[in-house]
Image (cartoon, rainbow, N blue to C red; front, side, top):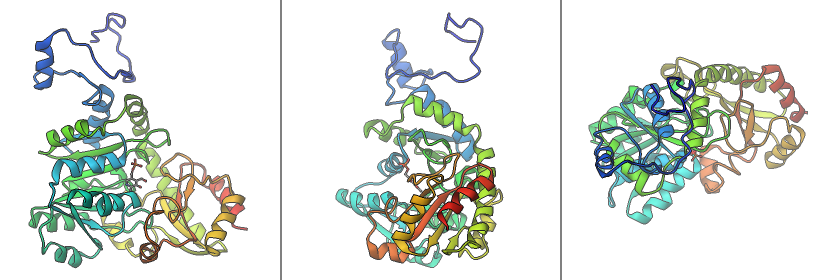
Length: 379
Ligand SMILES: Cc1ncc(COP(=O)(O)O)c(C=O)c1O
């Protein structure tokens, strides 16, 4: 029953928005009990607030974790994991195919604090084993890499990491817990950019860390001390998005699979990259890891490089050039200029991120509508 006299015995069906940065407390004893976790309550929103707690509880259950914490962005969630677990002088092993900002965080920022990162092809388990010739605190991978959807074998990476007393962190943003739950496959931390498919409507910037067992206190302290917290309204919106996540992922995955095959038949396209297609280098692994489809992300490479892309963007405004992903409607991005803008030309070449590469985040619209909008750019 509600304790709010205005509400009496009625309880709102939808969780209320607690848009308050601070709470009032009756006395010092209550404050002490809240701080010591002896009774529920909140004090200051940067330390925690009901909308973040509510969202985190739902996501912990969905991820198969014992706890989850919401942060102000996906990058804040990655930072929280590092800040809570890694000391100066320790080492990280990371995939050499990550979202560009994550690569910058590990390769440039953390080296300023005495944390060294070794980048390896985490699709090659032998390379990963070799990298453990020196100890490492974290092994960091993306389930499906941004942008080319290269897959990693999460259970086997977990085995290798744990043999070396290392924690496996999986950025599950492209897959979402609908396709794969990293914690159930052996990962120590699942990380998500809630800004993408989980928020689902391109109106929030949030991130998630979920785990099992220890690390909750250290992570929670890092979020508060380093100022990585979320705001209530974003959490409230993300909760609304979460309610339809499985439906949206199923519909968008079906659309993406059909779009990938359709694009492969169109003129002016050099290659289509989708893990659900037999010609994707990790198709077999994707089949063993995913049971609910192959996701809503795909790439295609246009003939004509950068100019070919500009032409497409100008002719097909109905597929907005909007450098994020996970909206209900189909949007596209150009990884070379956006998510991987600061990656060196040599690195882009190695990863296969060419000037003509377009990344499509397929939405839940009618397939025929997406195709007719795309067709305008492919004349
Ligand atoms: C795979 C992946 N991880 C992390 C992030 C960072 O998330 P955010 O933008 O919410 O900080 C992104 C953003 O595009 C991403 O694509």
